[in-house]
Every structure is written in C-alpha cells, then in structure tokens.
Picture 1 (tube, rainbow, N blue to C red):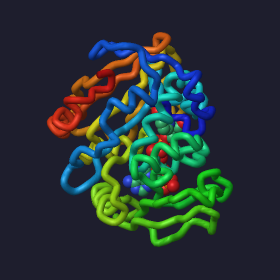
Picture 2: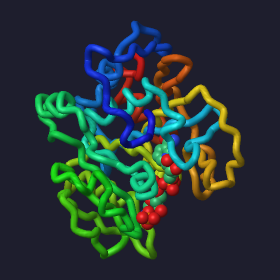
Picture 3: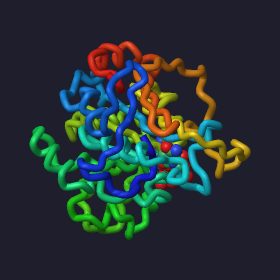
Picture 4: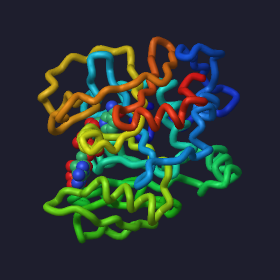
Length: 288
Ligand SMILES: NC(=O)c1ccc[n+]([C@@H]2O[C@H](COP(=O)([O-])OP(=O)(O)OC[C@H]3O[C@@H](n4cnc5c(N)ncnc54)[C@H](OP(=O)(O)O)[C@@H]3O)[C@@H](O)[C@H]2O)c1
C-alpha cells in the first residue's frame, strides 16, 4: 500500500502490527494474514489477454502522492507492512522509471522468510521487477540493477539497452514515437513470462496511462491521515493519477477497508473490470 520502494525491512513475525478490518468487520490481523486472505496465491483467472493488474498507491487525505518529491513522508508503519506483504504473492512488480529513479528501488523481496514462503508455494523466489521507460536513463547504481538475484524486465518502445549491470535483464519492446504500447506489453508479460498477477506501484503518470487504457483491475489506496496542501499543477504536488485527464471519470467499487492508527487502507475494484474483481474476490475481500 505505501509506495516508498525501499522502506525499512518488514517486521519479524513476532512483532507484526495489528490491523483492524472495517469492511467487512473482523478480528485484527497482521499484514501477511490480511494479504493471505486476499486469495492472490491461488491465481484466480486473470483477464484473457493480460495479467490481472493491482495498483497500489498511498495518498494524503488532501490527495498528495508525494511530499518533497518522495512518497516516504506520506507512508506509515502499517502501510509499509502491507506494501511488502502485497508484493509477496504476486508474479511481477512494475513501476515507471520516474518512480524507480526517485525511490531507488532495490531487491523486490528482501526478507528471506518471505522468499522461503514463495518457494514453498511453488513460486519463484522473487517477483519479476518490471520497469517502464522510454529513455532507459536509469542510474547504473540503482540497487535493483546492482543485485545479481534481480530478474528485471524493461518494458520500452526503444531499441536501446541499459548499461551492463549485475541483474538479469530482459526486454519487451513495443510501441512507437517514444510511447510504450502498454496493452501489448502487458500481454507479452503474460505470454512470455507467465505473469498472471501484476502489482503496479505507480507512479502517477504510469497509472494515468494504465487507467486510460482500461488496464487496471483493482486499486489499493492507502489513505494517510495527513494534510499537505500545495498546488496540484506543481510537479511536486502530484496526485495518484497524473497526465491527461481521463475521458470519463472511472467508477470505483469498494471491496474492503482496514484501519491502523487512523490510517485507512481501501481496496477498490475499477470500473470495466469491476465485474471480474467481484467474481475473483468475492470470497476474499481485503478485510474478510
Ligand atoms: N504516493 C504513491 O503511492 C507513489 C507511488 C509511486 C511514485 N510516487 C511518486 O511519484 C513521483 C514520480 O512520478 P511519475 O509520475 O513521474 O513517475 P512514473 O509514472 O513512475 O514514471 C514516469 C516515467 O515512466 C516512463 N513511462 C511511463 N509511461 C510510459 C510510456 N507509456 N512509454 C514509455 N515510458 C513511459 C517514462 O520514463 P523515462 O523518462 O525513463 O522514459 C516516464 O518519464 C515521485 O515523486 C514518487 O515519489 C508516489
């Protein structure tokens, strides 16, 4: 739910935070327990041509998605726990290059116990790390690329390559005029890499394009109990969706809600995919 890519490592099982389910109501639970109940491990049928896409973002109550150019100041402890827990059962984690650069992404699953859990459940040790970029201008010292264990897929309209790095890097090349064809890129992620559940961690410009293309199934929105002010047209005052205005406002359907220390965690089905989300999640709402 938070979006700082490299927040402090998740807590040990013995000291995990207790999060209160509001909708549907239930007993307080830890972040891994909450995510266990989402049913993501079981891979309910994804949309026919592409992975099921979950978008995870954090925002202040007045809509700010970054403060001082980072999402870290917005997030809280439970938010960070859920952020890591949500990564654990998915096949791939995707972010735009803007977010990768600013948040300095590192290894997707840093906790050995979570990697072990994935192995036990028949998954690879870590989700694929997917970077969307036209420029391929990623710093060679980006921790994600410096890790030999990282499996990275770059989604790009360009024919260029990243500078050599320790990570294992592959490419999906589609699109034109410096614009990735997101729909085709996601289909290729499914076909070539077997990605059925994709967690997109932003940023706002990538979100805007995914939403405009009808490519988001669910939004996990962490609503941080803060007001930051600021003028939205200013690049420093991004909201969770940026870029061109959507043709029609998208309708969201609340699937679940949690609370920890006044911080709300909302799970929404997104418009066209709402039916799919309801079908695939009816037994496993965020808080059930
Ligand atoms: N609150 C939250 O939950 C949250 C989450 C994530 C990020 N953030 C914040 O958001 C800010 C970054 O926002 P952002 O919107 O600029 O980041 P972004 O969407 O992650 O990155 C934008 C970049 O992604 C690439 N890209 C996106 N769509 C593309 C397409 N269709 N074709 C080719 N390339 C494409 C381009 O990279 P190239 O420039 O390399 O071509 C583009 O400059 C940071 O301040 C970060 O802290 C907040």
